[in-house]
Amino acid sequence: MLNNFPEAANLFRKCLQIDPSSAASMYELANLLYVKGDYVNAESYCRSALTLQHQNEWYQSLYADALTRNKKFADAIKVREKMCSQFPDRLDLKYDLATAYWYASRFDEAIDTYNEIEKISGINRELIERKKLIYIQQNKLDKAIIEVKKLIDSDPSQVMYYGMLAELYAAK
Image (cartoon, rainbow, N blue to C red):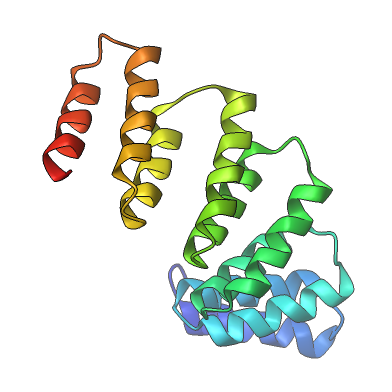
């Protein structure tokens, strides 16, 4: 039965026939559907699971992912914002929120969220890369350059950072 999606989905559907209020079964079926690329039905099953257990982090996360895949960015952002309020110390959730803002072309909010993360965690390459990409997307190369310079200042021994800066200057 390993890697047998249809059988696994059928068994979770059977679980729901036995107990239609099983949020866990709804979530597991949603997860299977998501993995198989059926984002519409994954969203639906996740929404149903959340009506029963609205605080569950895993259900919320998969729901936001499905909403994003279905290009419902504003709804995904609401879920991500709720999660950040619910778990305020979780930087991974702040990253997810910033990414949701980015997908929705809410660039200023994405940058603000990345800046908030930077204040907590310090400068790191992943964070600067994300901010740099947003600034490039907005054609704000001067701001992208400032970000890469911060990275260089944090670790001047990294040759790669100078290459990143050179690419920005060449594009300008």
